Image (cartoon, rainbow, N blue to C red):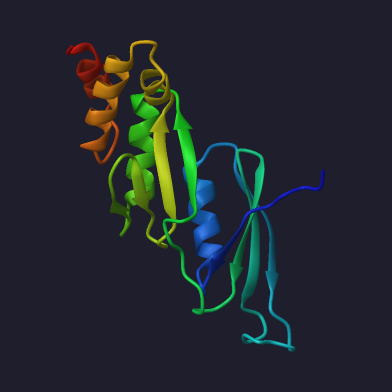
Length: 158
């Protein structure tokens, strides 16, 4: 199978976004920065693309212009082992102009959507006791940042 690389379309912030993302996730790096040449359509020397890896997974950031913007129709899920990870990614990705949404969703300062999800949420939603799973779901639906202890307390409240 060929390699599949997500390409994120920015107006002019591709390199800034790539640098931000690699600062948030461990084992990440910028792999290449390509610039527009004389053929345009942007001024020669400005960033065309920034290749980067997040924990070894390749991504490409493209400065394509203002014609297209991000929507919640596409997001990245960050599965977190514990509350410390949830809090780290939530705080980092909402910093400097990011916005919180509901149920673990947020937009970073570039307008890109992320889901910061503790793996414990999946476990609770798949609980063998459907009533317990529904209590966890109800609790999650009332949250912005997911709080594992609150999910567990809700699940156990029955």
